[in-house]
Length: 455
Ligand SMILES: *[C@@H]1O[C@H](CO)[C@@H](O)[C@H](O)[C@H]1NC(C)=O
Ligand SMILES: *[C@@H]1O[C@H](CO)[C@@H](O)[C@H](O)[C@H]1NC(C)=O
Ligand SMILES: *[C@@H]1O[C@H](CO)[C@@H](O)[C@H](O)[C@H]1NC(C)=O
Image 1 (cartoon, helix red, strand yellow):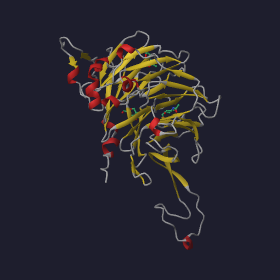
Image 2 (tube, rainbow, N blue to C red):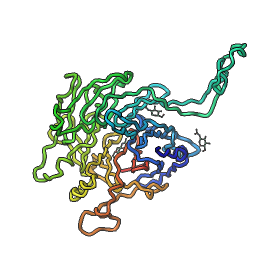
Image 3 (cartoon, rainbow, N blue to C red):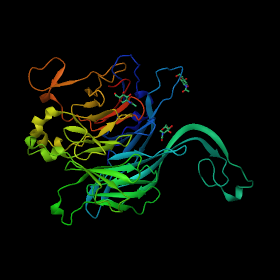
Image 4 (cartoon, rainbow, N blue to C red):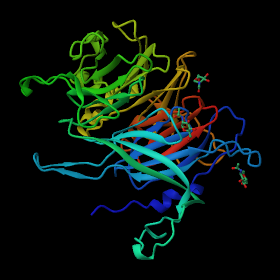
């Protein structure tokens, strides 16, 4: 049996400490939690007041940002645990004799339409729609059952009672509303809610399906790149996303470093793309690893919908949707690893899938690296910074100090040499608050939330 995660440790909001604004130029930070399990996805809701994380154990933890409180001026910005629930359980596929992991691959919020919140969570095979709702009243005085839920003896019921609502402590409930199963043969890597708020897509290694949020028993296959003969397979789908405003447009990236933009108006099956984004290869830097490191691990539209960003092993690229031939910007994430590719191949790190994200105004981008470092790029000033998610930097009032990796030559004080980087500490998942300078950084089983002037 799987060890049960220590929920008690999570449910204690006081585990979060907030830092006070020191007025320095760097960010203040707060360490949010230590989970028992490796965090596999982080996602803010559309206003940024809720932050959901998914983990390897199939659990979803939702944090809520505290509202302004005059008597505690620094409390705004604290994220406290709001709800924790088990989204997926391990399963067994008897036909293929395969274990299906419960790990949450992605979470996507739905725009809020009533008092409840809805989100989609997925593991390798099954997508679930969850409703998260609050309850602070309880009905009492039912006719057919008593307060404990036991049926009452019908012969003893002599009068008709009108149930009444009694106040109770606030309870946050998560209930599964829909289960979208049996539509993926390969592992689901992406889900994306359409701007029509009625449909969403799910992508696996070879196919992309389109679903209606209300309908679970069928989906439409909109992309299928599976070759008739699997031995001819040369390319897999690595990520897919809907355009933020045009409900007919979506993109998907591939292991060959390309991005295809598809328009569902032109045909029902989007096997033929309408735009194809690819950077011509520089023959001088060609090596045995070229193809592996050009594989795209994440693709994200900017909030404006004008640009998109892709992450490959060594860089992030910003593309203008109107220019397919080359990226508008290329930002090096950890170029110093180019000389280390051989050992990164041997320890499988070269296959790590780093994600990337935009800030609220699309003028800064963030992505992860090794040694618990993450990188931020300011697109306007062209400045970049390397920061570290660590216990040290998450002390209250601590500010984030930029880190530097020494690449040959004499190592300066405060610099870290490439050879002492810890490749087991990797930051794959990060999220940026949609309107504020607040970021969430998942470092294996720690979640860090930094806020203030970050970059
Ligand atoms: C504000 O903080 C005080 C002191 O901690 C607390 O008693 C009060 O309930 C808070 N008010 C709100 C609206 O959360
Ligand atoms: C995000 O969550 C907050 C906190 O509950 C809520 O007030 C807000 O409406 C949500 N935003 C959207 C757009 O769903
Ligand atoms: C995004 O980053 C830029 C550059 O650092 C900053 O000026 C801007 O305020 C940020 N926007 C948001 C919404 O965080």
